[in-house]
Length: 302
Image 1 (cartoon, rainbow, N blue to C red):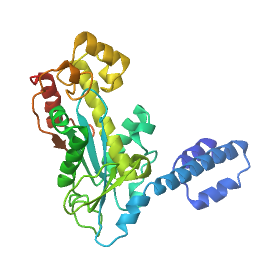
Image 2 (cartoon, one colour; image 1 turned 30 degrees about the vertical axis):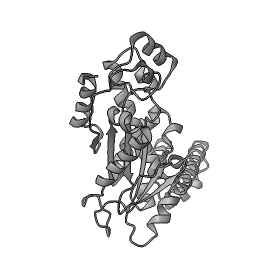
Image 3 (cartoon, rainbow, N blue to C red; image 1 turned 30 degrees about the horizontal axis):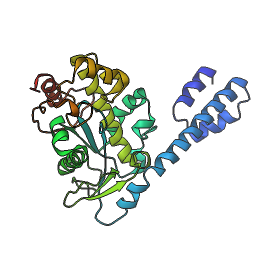
Image 4 (cartoon, rainbow, N blue to C red; image 1 turned 180 degrees about the vertical axis):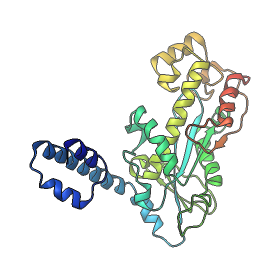
């Protein structure tokens, strides 16, 4: 075989017989390609081992009688001064091989580019995904902890594996267990398991973390165009120096949380009351309800 043909072969999944023949080829170019191939294989093996360790909690519960599905929940945006909170719920396939997503980790440990690359993979592999946009008015009314808890409960109330996504031998249903990053929502019929640093320990929570983070980052980039000068596309609503200076110079906007300082001390009227918005994301397809949420944030009365 020519070197180019061998390179193409090794880029795919060569058979054991083909590999045995290549191992006998003494050409320097072939041996170099084999060394590169072996390095990639070893890297993938270690990544699969790491990912398998992130499924420890999922396997623990899926082995119990009556447990068909385990969900993961996480949020993005509890700390920012501006913008809504975003919560995601994800159900990955019970089969670890089917659930394998290379590079999946706590969203905070991933670059923005890596999160964006993982986002469509998660949506493709997951059996179910639901996102909840928690309104600023609910954050101010309930406080961030209770608004987060309520938002997670709303997700669990509607998160379910549809019949066309249910693996062979498993019925379409809601999850029986939900792994949650350091929160404890309460939903009848679903056991919720709070896990400290869960987004780094559970693949399901990590997947929810990425979906929530990407969704919110995209929203904040859109809000940055509506409310320029606050650096929202960069700081995502957190209290960066630029953001704090802008609040002092330009004042607070309709998307600033009235219950967070320094806005709280400005004694502004409350933002208009709005319900949370739940939807199932589809990559490449703009959700009309989410577009309405952004438009609402632009036009609502302060």
